[in-house]
Amino acid sequence: MESTYQNPLSITHIGDPFVLKAPDGKYYCYATSAPDGFKAWCSIDLVHWESLGYVYSLTEKSWGERDFWAPEVIYYQGKYIMHYTARWKENHSLRLGVAISEKPEGPFIDVFSHPMFDFGYATIDGHVFIDDDKRAYLYYSKDCSENIVDGRHESHLYVVELESNLLSIRGEPVKIAQPEQEWELRSGNEWRWNEGPCMIKRNGKYYLMYSANFYASRNYAIGYAIANHPLGPFQKAAHNPILYSTSPEISGPGHNSVISSPDGKELFIVYHIHTNPDCPSDDRQICIDRLFFQDDDTLHVLGPTNTPQPLPSR
Figure: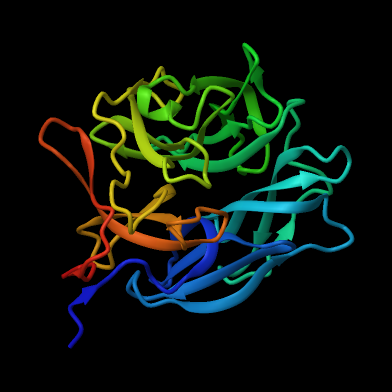
């Protein structure tokens, strides 16, 4: 009987993987995966995945025109809500959209004929977090394509509270992170990134995971910041990055989500790496590794691995 798995897994030619554990007990993986929408995959064990094909498709009514990136899906009040990135055909700038489906395999249909909000700048990588008090927050990246600071293109992380339906915002966005640690500056001085936010909560503390450096470089890696409130202020961990590669066989681990094992006893980080480590590009594939906390409440990853590992829940 199979007792181990080995990275990378079978989902290829993707980026920005997000995994949802649905009420039916199955896992659904959504990812940057097509020029005209999003594909998804299904699994019962986090390791063996079956393709579901398209779950969201570009139509004549779509507000987005291309660059369909980083879909994330949350099960909420009996429906599946997808937040995603696309380029707005009105002004060719990146924005966040929202679509809904009755089923995790779609089809997801846009709620609006326009982005869910417009702050006048490019936004990508939306991530929804619902706190224990049921208040909901959207974390996102103000994209470096249009954000220029001191002559540099920089991506910064923001958070804004959501209305209870998860379809619109309330209040004003709050800037919570920007590239500043040494490891975040390895792609050079002209372009810098903090992107791909992912929030988890433990013992009353908020752990904001994120990626830094150019996605199509070996330097792409994951760190985290910690706060006592979902709106911050956040303090970046001194031991960042917590997922990076020094192996010639593994390149650019980044843009993660976090999910529990089938028995609920373990946490796994889901992330992508470059398919060809010698020539990093937007061709990526999925990996999973164990995520854990030390006694001092610091966050760590047992990875990136490319050797046999115990199956989740083993």
